[in-house]
Image 1 (cartoon, rainbow, N blue to C red):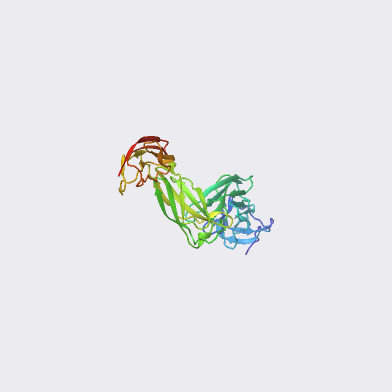
Image 2: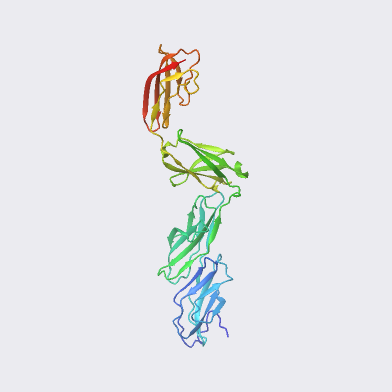
Length: 388
């Protein structure tokens, strides 16, 4: 014999049946199925529960044990709002009063085209026996992560909406909402929603082949390589000592290298580089593995000047000072003959004086001024002898 879900008419009732005191509809994270849970009735003569669903409370399930306090709604999708009520019955057909209507939380999240933020909304957790104290929104972008990160909280009166900007390199983000009751004994979890970035094919990943460090000029040459995606817009990123990534350059066309100049402030620093592709919305995605290098400390500023040169000597036939340390904004070298006329001048440390066969032998005067990257300035003058 089966009774309607709303119980027997009052005239048929023979005794009062104690109802349940707690109930909740939640979604199991692993199976994504709606699960109804409630506290067992205190009535020792109770033999089971009726569960009904919908606004008209039509029959849904009958559980023939007072200790059956959970039910899996296998044919109810968690992405749709459902309403449930339950009551207790005994062997004589007596029923308790129906519980208030309670339902599942439905979470929705979407990313509009060319927008960095994800728009997240969820329905209220209706009918929680103690009332909702707050909602907690969680997210994760790593599918292998064990747990979610709490990204927002709101009380029951606040709007159930959050705009969230995922990590820049996240191609997929998973979200869920938890409703916490005022007595926190029972909590309700929403369905899980995965939002995927709209991006081009990431199979053609860029990579950095190697880094070449010039410790004299204090620059890093980043050697790039690509595949079929080499014509796609790209960005080059740099991180110092494991800190935040900074966009270093936008790479147009298909360059094979990029020179990171003027890095003397990063002496004894770990510099890491990576590249990324850009989708049609100019958003970065598909980050390459990083390549890192340590920038060595510069040598102490030091200048050594030869005092003679022999014309025609392969090893000692030119005049150029030896400089240790990183040269800054200024380098000037002058060579004067005995009459005080300038016979050679350069502002390039790599350029040397090459006397010609017609240059008279004898003593010449030089004036050298060097400004180093650490702020040291050295000015030297002296005599150099040309021997034929």
